[in-house]
Amino acid sequence: MSLNIKLVRVDPRLLHATVVINWGSFLNANYAVLVDSKYEKNPFIEKVMSLYLPPEFSVRIFDVDGFIEFLNEKSEDMRNAMIIFKDFTTAREAFDKGFYVKELQLSYPASRVMLKDLSKYYSKDEIEEIEKIKSKNIKLYFQTSPFDSKDYSLF
Amino acid sequence: MKCLSEINEAHDILIKIFNEFIDVINEQPVYTIGLIGLDDIIIKSSKEMYVGKNKNIIKRNEYNTIQDIIINNEKLGELWVKGDSNIVWISNLILDSLVTRLLYELYEQSLIQNITKDHELIKLLLDSKNFDSEKVMELSRELNVNMDLARAAILIVNEKGFESKEIPRLKLKEDSKQIIYALLNKNNLLIFKDVPIKYPNYEVKEYLNNYIQNLKSWGISNSSFIIGSIQNKLIDYKYSYYECKWLKENKTIETDKIYYYSDFLLGTFMDKINYDCIFNHYKFYVIDNKNLDVEEFIYIARNYFVNNYNITKTAESMFMHKNTLIYKIKGYEELLGLDIRGKAEDKLIFMLIAASLKQYQLRKQVGELE
Image (cartoon, rainbow over all chains, first blue to last red; front, side, top):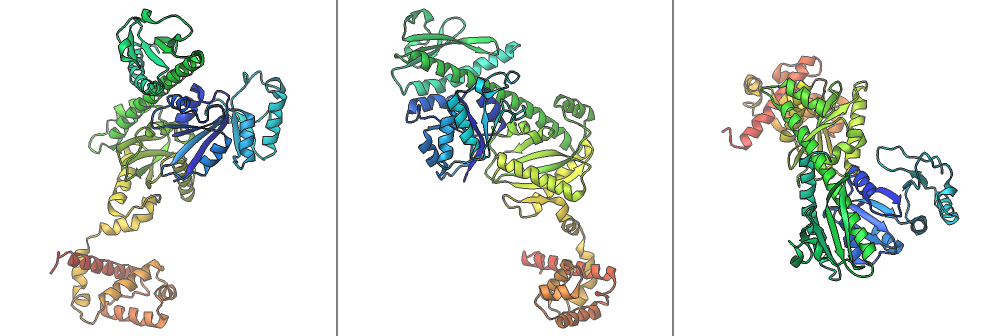
């Protein structure tokens, strides 16, 4: 069977209530792939992270290389996956190594009403990474829940 | 959370999922966790010896944390974590995962309650003897079902059985908010899908094909999809379902394919014809006639029909010379006294004779006839 990527998101908090409840159920996902080198190869943390979701939902943590290997992994089951990158640099590295999606979802760094200028909420390095990602023909947008519309306006 | 039953439900789920947390923590002996009830008694712990003890046995130092478990502004208990120098970080992670998981389970529970109501509505809609319009209206209103929309039945068959946990989430899909649906059993999922009535027939098919494609990419895989007629009134939805059921029971249904009852209408009608009267009428000319090749007769009639009674196309499809085909059909015309190449009525009779012969052969094969 294949990997069916349902959502690709950058979220420093990785798994949390907004992601799990809003997106897990809505997308009918059964796989959460967290890309964060900090927790990679820590089976205990991976297991605690797995507790965010019921047992039929798999949670895996990879660094970028492990993630790229995972993408090419053959599986018997249909993997409906949410992919969550810890930060822009991790996401950009994955794109550099061959991963591609049309769109990348971001969590709002502040209230959407207040959000006017990216430089107020992201560092210079982060904005540089955003530009590099955009240059790969990947659209970035803010969205909290499936019932909100995608906000592309600041990109 | 407002009422007591909701708090109790959350509490029951908390106790159930806490066992999963204990299993994970037990793999890392440096940590101990405990669930403390509102009465300060430890209800569950990764170390059995603490269960039933008052929380005042827990030392207040940098290796122990006790944090409130709060769901929707309601305190359900406390989480105790004992560990090493990472205690603050790890206890926050465990608390966050516990609260998130609890919220997730409660959300799934609410979805299941809704699908139970959908199931109840489907049962009422399929009741062929008594259509309880009052109850149907009441439930429809409760489920926010727009009763002015036209809908078509989609029967989804999965030989392995559906994942019962994913089905309640179906209504979360943007294009599924107005569906009425139920798992009839573990292999059959019935959806009454709303269809825009402004669409002409061919666009409806495109619309439903797209919907099914979305269902597949959402996660309903390895299934076959059978679609009945569009119905405008809730009382008539059952007819759309009966069509799907008929197709499922009478045709070979393959995985991942879409079947429209409307594509099988002729076959359905043909199945309902009493062939005995046709067969008996022509028996002398066809069965008792030793010179007639019955197999060839059926083959020619079927191809003639499929090719829209066009002699040239029929001959081509059978890899037969056109004149040979005309010669054979002329033979049938003389034998049966029919104008098979001319009169529409006789063309139909020709096809019905072939169908009756086919049925005769089948009955003979299974030993029904001598």
